[in-house]
Length: 92
Image: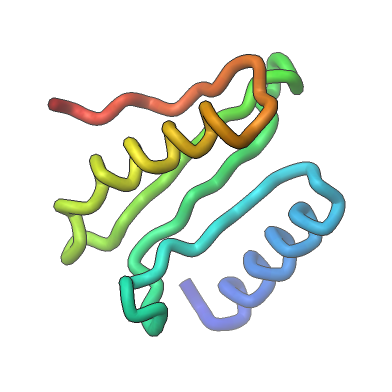
């Protein structure tokens, strides 16, 4: 992705966050110095009361995919008011 396209993408996510129509979070290395993934939360197209969640981690941090999924799932269940969350489960 070009720097220009990445900047436009970041601006779009910031605007969605400000309007509270979608939420995008960077996943940082424990030191806080490096982005190692992202989490996206947006209303489902077929039902705005349902949130669809997508996340990724960099290939060199692939072992963190399932722990990220578990942490985000727990956070959504305890701290967010969504009646339904669609977040594809990870393999065991």
